[in-house]
Image 1 (cartoon, rainbow, N blue to C red):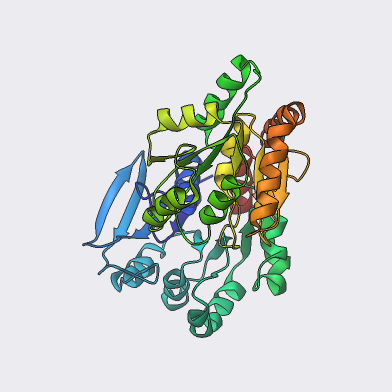
Image 2 (spheres, rainbow, N blue to C red; image 1 turned 135 degrees about the horizontal axis):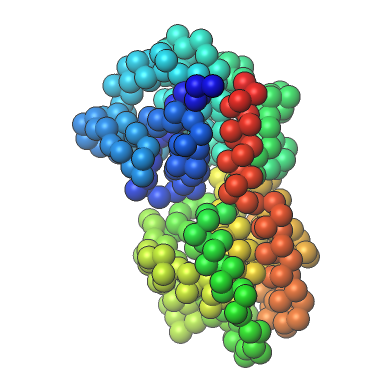
Length: 370
């Protein structure tokens, strides 16, 4: 039987780093031997280029830049129309309004899969204009993938399309899982006087970093490593000084894989303090769980609390609640045995629910069924 011809469509692609970009790359590279897979994305700025990245053909449509998180690319519309002609399935990753428009204008008659990663949360005024287009696109779709039930229950838009929704959890990166396994096999629990927390992510409005720093200031004897960068970094560094916690909070920047591996190994607890459902899953949660680390997350109306379970694999607190987050951190510091057991269960949950092989197998099965 001939291989299915698949075109994945997203805003951007590797080496741009982001949760959605990683999923697109994992699907493209993971299924390239089982399908005829291509990828269409946009340039952040510049002319159209075609590349071979790890055996995957990636077309980056030229753009004039990015406005309101959206590439300004007219050639993208023409590229999708042309590239879709011989494809069995178009696989879109949302939110990406330009992709919705391109599909509807293309005249494509084949099967359409949407991977719904999150609602659009911040640009509410834009939704008044975009909503009719989005609804038309969702009606057009043959299947809508979500990573958890929380993506459906917490969405402002998916309820009337829930019959099309198929839950396919994300899988932890294979290299990270392997490193986590090697660490966990050889790790020897030792009593520590100072609890080490780890945050990994962008320093942006919805990540809750300001809430985290204020919570840290309320708990003595806690050390925090913060991996990442972003527009809020200068303000966060000012907050650390104002709160008098500069000796306990360390900004590590954007570090390489080896340094990140070390950061996961050295932490006792991973913390995801996000305050808005723009945080729809939190891939870093399953990465920390691969190392057997318990997670403190927030009870967002999204997939976040479905990943690490409250009082099983970690603690879940209300979003934007400084005192509740401080109390959770303090609990982790005072309950070492329970914390270690949560870490063990976190790793078990990762292995049971968030395997890359399962994610790829289920995506391929969906393609074949369509």
